[in-house]
Image (cartoon, rainbow, N blue to C red; front, side, top):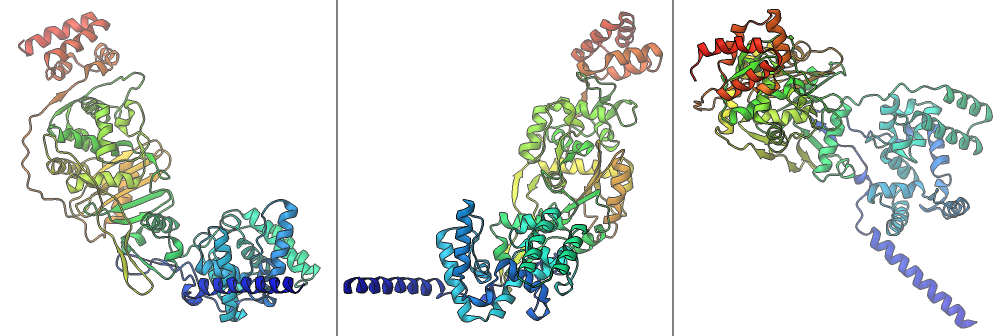
Length: 640
């Protein structure tokens, strides 16, 4: 018997020694809990002014309503004032309930344990983390009072949507100070703790109310409210409607755009919320000017020489969430390729009816001009000459250029309609590619995080331009091709489809119109902005260009067009892919007198012999008499 007692005592002492060793080991190097309290990170414009308030607000315990504290304690830790950080009764109760339900539904964590987890540990569930959590909770109870622990918990608990603490959650979800929330609103906020991203009222209002009722039921059961108050509260809860979240003085899209980039850089929210300052690349004046635009308008601007995002507003600016049909805003990309490959901007393109399979592309005005230069086709955004150019370059060649050199992510159609912008992509992808035109061929990664400072004001990250690709030289260098194309894109704004974007200083740009989006993309060497307006029956030059003009009219840095010294001397070309001409329509026009034979002879005089014979053969199949008349006139105008 004596040996059993001795063995028990030795085992007990060994267990106590091991536990004491673990306690000391886990807690010896802990920082003070106050230094770990989430303060939220600060977002600033590029000039250092604050963009928004932090997503964590400090509230004193004495400013928290008693009914809120009661709701919190009955929901999260009924025995808070009676345990030393770890509640054996709560753990036992959780084990029994988990066994009875054959699942792990209840963890038995006290408020002190939850605080330990928030301040010092990761959310990953392991036995080692759980053990650390127990010892840190005991350590907290030894070094802080119950009131201090409760105050730290109220100000640090995660509440979904990047919010920490009940004070920030009450402002965000209800537009109120925590001291002003009603009993039902308090119950809703307390219920969020169990699953912040799933139970918050913004994410799921019905579930949020359902969970809030369980909090009200617990208040009744524990005697904090009587049955009459409970009944009235439940009736009001069932009748409640949610008006939506209250803005924290910033665009939610900006917040999550910044968070995504920070995560890509290797910074997590848990680290950043310790009072870090995030200096963005955003221009304050531009951002404030764009803040009043309707939600159907998406605007983004970048510095083409660095990739810095200067303006970011609207749902879905990035891919894939923001993909839209590009329309004619795609044209500068393959005009750029054509110039690189040696096409003169004064090369001639045929503007006559086309038929490619079942597709019959048309110009916006439904008219035809016969022969036009590449310059005129781009300035007036003519579809048929552009399709002709696209076909001469080759679909595979153009798509390879868009994907692999300009690095445009998007949904690429399989057919020829991509020539007129059925590519689905996002404003940021468009700007990334346009920047190569404006800077002489360098594709840069857009970025919005300029600098990060820690809580001590020390810079821990400084952004620098990231080159994704440099456009390959062909007959011309990328810089030479950019100079030629930008001169034409200036004409788009001065006298073409983008005239409503004209400024008092030189700018270059391009309009685009698709089924449900109107575009204007333009700028200069220091600034490019894309405006996309969503809706029905819109036109880029009418609906997007004026918004672009309005936003940039007071932008101080506009008007610096590239002045590279280049000399370009290229021979002109003429293209007429005759096999795709809508010959049936041409024959009909000739027979009706809408198109004269002399006019057609003038157009075909620019064809080489092989293309001319193919064209005459197609006419002959439909009307031998017209083919004969054409041949007789053509013989008089050219030598063979």
